[in-house]
Length: 310
Image 1 (cartoon, rainbow, N blue to C red):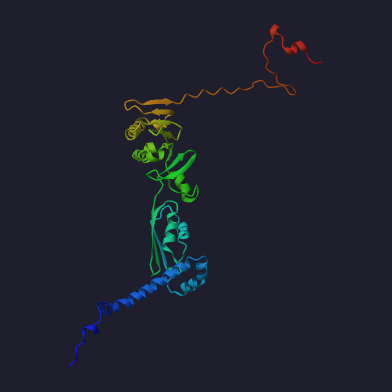
Image 2 (tube, one colour):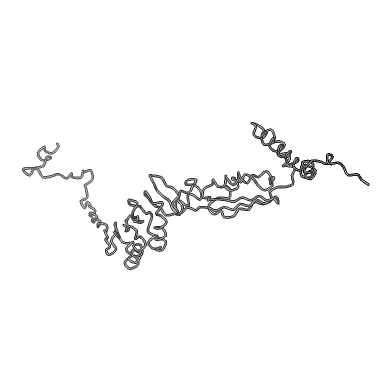
């Protein structure tokens, strides 16, 4: 029979708690050790030249790994060239997949012209998937002597100048001119899109005092649109063009600012060309043509007063 121990031999409450939590203390100690090791490694990498010293070891480890890029898939790119996308990614098929930085590639892609935002995915199977959402240009804005691509909201779209697809955008998109034209362009261009016969004659839209529009036609004529009534005015203009071919007539100004009146200023008629002068008198060989002169007082010419040469 076991004799019970005295109360003084019993373990304390802290001792009983430590015994019960013994299984948790060992894993916790391991986690603390790993955290300290990771923190020390991070601090070491912040030292100048640390990453350069570790680069050969990193490359050796990555070159030995079997995980390599097998496919690069790009979706949503219409205005952004394939070459620009692959240059921003910085990797090619066959490169180590672990050497690909998703965040750095995403930042470079977001900086490309026409790109609004992008998502980049890296899979250990070797697939790199890029989804691009572009902010396509809507018009060309001429402002203070500069030409800029703008989107539907009137915000500037970064471009690479008059090269590649940017040049195509500059030549094919509608041109709006003046202060505030970028912000009001979408409503006017949408109204012009509904009247294709009129839009085919328009080469530029000029914003006047940030209130209304003047349209410049291909033949140099100007159409004055009313403030805030562009859509019905363009519809009337299309009807006039259908019935009387107004936009093909030799006019310099079409004023549509009044809803019940249309003012047209035609080009002035061209003066008739003067008839061509022909000399019907044949000059004798060796003789000089007579020089025109005005009659002199007394009916004598300077040559008659001077006499003929001997």
